[in-house]
Image (cartoon, rainbow, N blue to C red):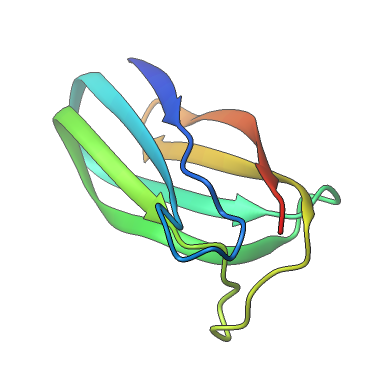
Length: 102
């Protein structure tokens, strides 16, 4: 099972223009299991779920608006985006950085 992630970073800075970050990726050789995409703080704690659905091969995109699971805007800083696929062969994940500035 393989997947590749492309971060298309928006401008999460509070100016009202392009206020999101988009994570795009393709899954290959997957038919079943669970796909999860989450925003994390640097300690690895989940602050927002961006996507959770059954995993099948194909293109995906998840958007983060810079808010936590309570709907509050996160403070400026470096965050992580985790893409995780849980299939019967195990859990496969990739993590990449994302900056938020205001």
